[in-house]
Length: 192
Length: 432
Image (cartoon, rainbow over all chains, first blue to last red; front, side):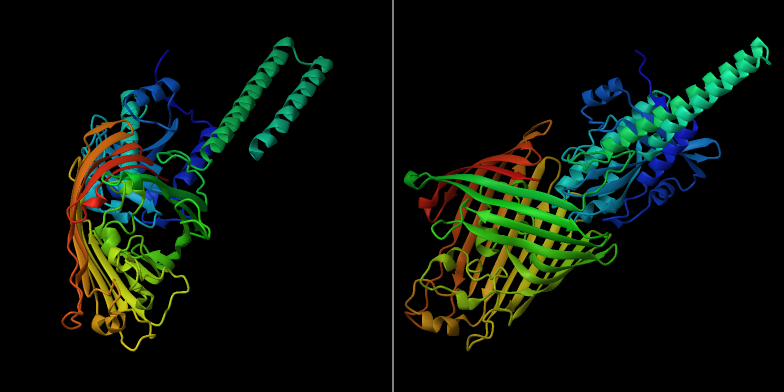
């Protein structure tokens, strides 16, 4: 069976789906302290980009299993990857994701270079009463340069923040997941 | 949902209309056979397109339903579709402890030390309510040792991206443990002595607090709150020797509010893995009900560093009560007078020795020194109590994480002064 990433066809229904996804990707304004919108984060990560082309990636069951074997729970089969472009030249990728901190959702963005290495991580919304320190640049900088081959694991290559242990762990797990999914997509040509 | 309902009748209408067209075309006998075949092909194409659209909408509906369920897993991801956030969240923590004094095994106890249920409700994007109700020792009644307590009940309002304000019953920002006291958050079956005997964890007061989180890594917490009530001091009991402030805190249970305290805490986490902090709490404690005013002050310095697999922590806390000579005069002759000062410190090192998937084994060692009656105010020769001896405790054990929300614990504790208290402990804790 061919293992490949499926891109949605460019029919009317895709536009409908993309519109739904874009709405969903905007930081959930309810119940949140919003620091950045998805668009602001993307522009912050790729200031030279003139446009961001959103692509839907759909993982099939074998790819989900492949991620699982790498110790990464894909959780969702559908991912939206934004490709930053200057003219027709791709500059990198941006993925917006959400994980639960302790009780509430953390919305964050991962920017990746064309080689799949993390360029930047931004916290878009944080809702917990404690643990806002994961927003600190010094903590987020630890992810820069990480690839799918990196552990991206609190206690190994990512330092914990005292009092924000669960938020640190879950954002680190989330970044690992994003990096691995984008790496898979790159290698299958789905982002070209 | 409505899209697919709309498409289905449209599809039926389209089929019927085209069939009618086909029949009428055939009945008219005007077009040639090729013309008829072309129309049938067109019909087939249109039908295929409509079917594809219907299927895609149904798929999206199914995907939307799947991802809009409340995220129950801590690692739930919502890469493409943001799940609905529940406005009300239920959470809990608790612990069951086994304590076996090695020199007095007849005193061995197993206790559901605490079971806490928490409810957090988001009113809107800026306002939320945080509450916790706790049952200690499993059963609470007139004939049982248990207690039912409201541990937290406060409203939080986000002022902007940096500042938020709280009002109600909240945990005082002091030390490393008081605000984060879930069993999964600390090492050892029992909470450390310094942060129970000197800092009376779980210590909460009613008042207002503002919290500022700054981009340079500083977190500032400050506010006004109810304080201690020295009128509650029971000189006939040893409770005041076990925890001076634990015996006179009010917990917002018909709390006397004549004397309002002020508090502040500053923590810096500018370097990943490092936390440096200090806190102070001070306020009157006779509540206008004694002839002598008295001030209770408690402060601490703390540090935590988590390089790689290491988790290192140290803390010093000191409390003082003013004008205790006057307050103690009528209590002379009783076993427990009010101390003038009390303090303690600990240093702790833990190392994550083994990890597999969610399992993790973390041995630790902790050294503590604390004195709940470091000094007494002078009452005159023969009347001034002797300062208590400084207790020194070493705790060696391990936390075994079954999952991030479940922990098994085991440790041994050796007391240098009161070695009758030496014990072996086992514990089961959870938090979600």
